[in-house]
Length: 80
Image: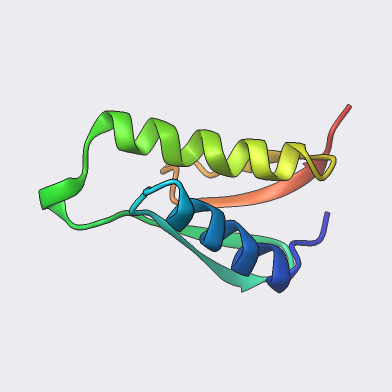
């Protein structure tokens, strides 16, 4: 499933509005990268909230997020 650059822009705006300090960068049409904040603000709770926000964002658009083994990259699949 294709990841539109515009979705990444809007997702980052949503994450900023929620006060999450993570950022998502578009790698190509099939992959995006999650960029965590610096160590001073990196907490397990913030990570959980940021990843949930990403999953919810794409779920609302009919996609399921598939994470890489290291949890820093993701691709999309159609939701069942």
